[in-house]
Length: 411
Image (cartoon, rainbow, N blue to C red; front, side):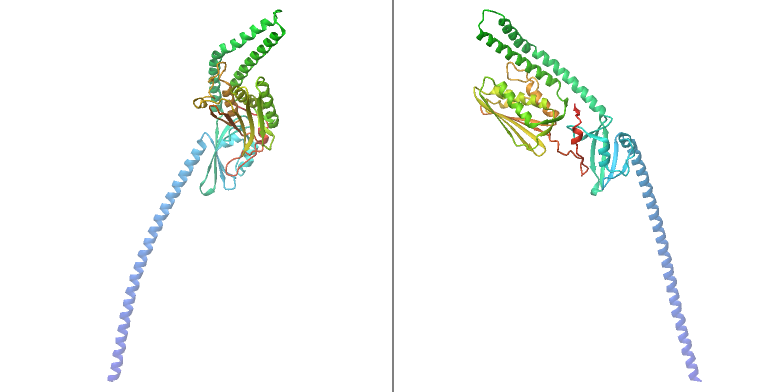
């Protein structure tokens, strides 16, 4: 009996212990569940906040995109956006209006070849077929993801600039006419005086020949002054055609020898340029170079040498004219290209100004180096080579040779 009681007591104690453990586990589960509910509520709150923040960011981006789209549409210039392959992915209405049709999906190379014509002397400007002048700017997008092209209509600005240049030219022409009046009158009066003596039966044939030579000399002087005046008046307006470099150099030699009739001048020509057909205005270049050569002949004494050298520096033609004459004082070298500046008593001061204007019309440069008593060197650099490629930045290039052959005028 006692044994059975002991067993039952042990079972009751074990059952009580099991219930106690169960209660403890239940309390722990309740606590864990409450904690889990708190975590879920916190996560819901965080998700709601993140969603609200994301919606706000998306709304701001949409507003920014709409604003940028309005700005893009309102810009007075054409804007074209290219992807990394050069395809148009975005453009505004001005760009479509300028280029005449929808541009999306086309390459910039195709559009440029179809609608644009190079402007001689200005790689940043192109001309449409209707004559509209466009200034074209390029900007790379970050990480080389594409390009932005800006098209600005500068037709009116160029017209105003041309008008201003014309007014300046007319003003300079007025000053030139006033300064040249006595210079034209003096050789003209001398020529008339010598011509009046030709009809005098008392003079012998030797004097008659001398008078004829003096008359011809004065007339040549007048012709040179008129040519300088015409060249100065026409500066910047040159029609570009193909010409032969060999022929030009030959004409320079002939012109130098004809001018130096009374001096035993040695004229040498060196031509290392492989390409003979170039692009420019041969007449204007010949006149400008002859102006330099005539100055070189005048600087020589009874005997001297003139060297004419033609070389190539990358895509530029280099023309160098050197003499071993008296040279030019250093203080004059910075002014010799100014209109009306001259050190000659009978000069107009336009010869080298015409040289400068002709070179600039060819988008070139001219420089002078001289030392008194050691001679003078004129160096002219001209982008005259037809085979040169005048391309667009970042690989979007096109050859402009055929377009330049169409004889455009530069102003």
